[in-house]
Amino acid sequence: MQPTNESFIRQPRFLILTALVLLAALCRMVDHGFVNVAPIGAMALFGGACFRSRKAAFLVPLSALLLSDVLLNLTRHSNLWSEAWTLTAFTYLAFVLVVALGMLLRKRTRSVFAIAGGSLVGSIIFFVVSNFGWWMTMGFHAPDFAGLTQCYVQALPFFRNTIASDLAFNAVLFGCFALAESRVLATCPAIAEAA
Image (tube, rainbow, N blue to C red; front, side):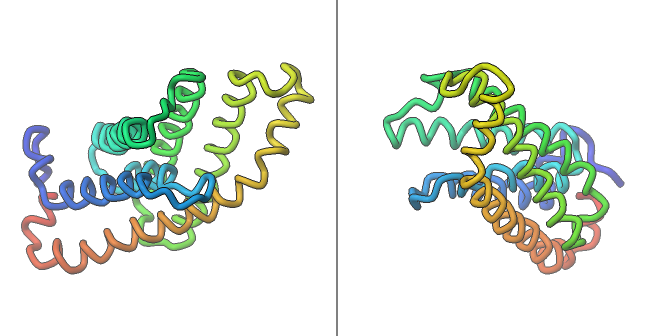
């Protein structure tokens, strides 16, 4: 039996998924000194792939991203939106596209190859969209094809961090959820079926 719209947020599966996304978002608070090492892409792919409700697949990861952005602004005394709010819009657009990509993986969340492939494609989406936004809004490069090309080339050293970060965080999120499904949800089949 599928849960009603009113009850799905009380289901164990939903609560576990939400907790994992929120924990990933809190990892953004750690100042580790590496550029582009963050769980953003993984949160999006994981949310799209694992939440059964399309609404939750978008709202939970987006809310976690927004919350972590607000906390970063408060704790680091810098405004992520001050220089170019349109650049932030490109970041959120890339995030939404990766959530949609995750939805294509819904029936293959146990496949290491599907998750790794989705992670790589998600990294590429984020790289293309966010750097296009950087080129369009920040004014550091010429407003022509050569400037756009230069922007992408200069961003390549950061791209490997994005790929490694997305792969690592996806491994943790999907792995923890698989473990939770086998240990927690499997112990009560009736609840797991409803979730």
